[in-house]
Image (cartoon, rainbow, N blue to C red):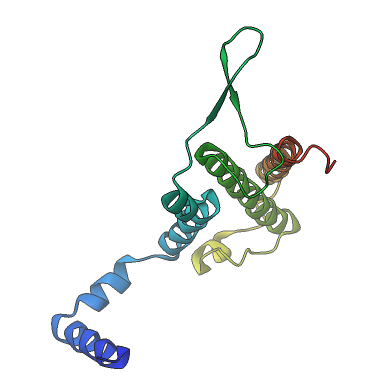
Length: 164
């Protein structure tokens, strides 16, 4: 059965039951954005890689002198990973993205322009609200981005020490 027949059947069911209109009224752009961020987080965390290869959450290595186990990462192998490395890296990618979005939003506010993400009512009600709030958001966005950049760079240094 071709996919076009399936699409026609789904459209017919939607017309008869009316569930499509109810869902469209309840879904907001913020929900779509949150779904995209969540899927980006899961993809960059390596969920598919982890499901296929089943890596351990962390690596352990015995210290030759004391015999105590210590936590290690997979060194000198960029494609090999532990599950925790993927989750941490994905968190920092999301943190950097949020920092860029926050900085962009604050820069629009400082310049007195309406952001593309504002609703029409917010654009009308806004009478040049600039100042401390915008500067704090700008500073927080820059700090989030720089923190994420430093941590990701540190992870690369740990994985590939000869690269830096």
